[in-house]
Length: 287
Length: 290
Image (tube, rainbow over all chains, first blue to last red; front, side, top):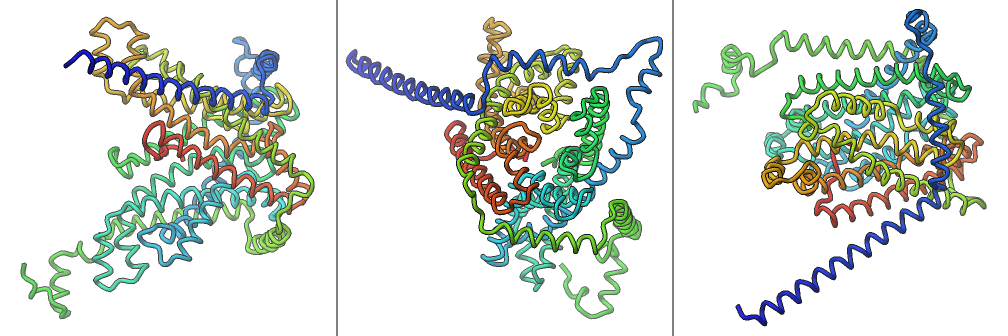
């Protein structure tokens, strides 16, 4: 190789490097600008954070109960004085999540086959199914809850319906994606044998997607337990109402007790669902 | 294959049933099991519905009211608060952006501390993992409510809530990505005499950075959605106006805000897909989170 070739190669290399550096700097600048703008619009500055941090620290300290070795049981009993009531509310919360998951999954089952490209029965029904699932999952569940509390009154019914609609949207999308990934040969076989649309889905599609559907549904249940625990903020049932009161009225020790109960429940349900999932579909098939 | 013996005449079908009953229906035990499970789920659901006092009459009356509300939602109008809504929407996105950026940085050391292949000491790992669980186990709205009490009403409480809950989520995702990393580059760097920091920088980071970025973008999308409701408890953003308009039954304005949220969420999803495909070359989001 001649020296001139090496030199021109080197020059070209340096030019490309400089150009990539310029682009990187430009994007970094854009990112920094966006960050600054966000901080300004979000009223976020370090002085405020620095002032806030000690207050948060103080707040957390206040929520912690006074526990002494000499009177441990007495102190614990005082800390968890509301336990019977809280456990009832917790049970209600889990049931809200269960009912909502069930209803939402049924809705998703009804819509997902219409919303999958390979099985849709027509352009109109495909479009309608897709859009309604999109709207159902994009509007936050708490917004549904606010409207339903107005329509159905304060109580768990509003919460159930709100979470159910949101689950329908979320699960419907996942279900439709699973349906779009199936092997179409069994479908063709059944169609050739003269099966109608419902029979085709029952015998060719469902056996293929059922493990996925089950996994998604269990996982949705985990999410819904969390949502059900806050849906009470707007009066839609569950333990959220109690939480809201405790935080608003500054019942400090209740807050830590409720958080402890809630986190324990969520972790237990997560682990149980994970175990169930593995049992149902085997470790390898986990979607 | 002998096709004559299994023709369509009833005798042949009966013979086939005798030879292989499993081909015609599931065993009795399996069918019983199915009926039991179905019955159990049905009975339990019925119990729930009774407990929650769900009756056809209540549903009917509620639906009636709901249809009425939907009728009042059209046409969606902003009245004269259009600019307020637009600014609040912008604030929502800003909260999500700032919260995600800070959380994705804070999650890096936490994620490393939870990764088995980088931190062999199980006590350290255990402590960090359980604290992650607490961060993630408490819902963002609860954090928001607590921060509103601690630092006052406004977007700062919302941003802090996003930071806290997503640091936990991202740390978990990061640590999983780190644990799944190929260990050969790590061994290579170690063999060349690299120290712990250099091992992470040259052995692990190039492998996990695309995954981390993809996760962070995904969390940003998810935060844009959840930040829209933080305002319901006074933690900044559009949620404050939405909750207020619904509670005061100004349905036309409420539906305007909902449409604004929909448009923003779609726009952010689209933009995030573009960025992801530019940075990582794939448009797929993490399925494990949606």
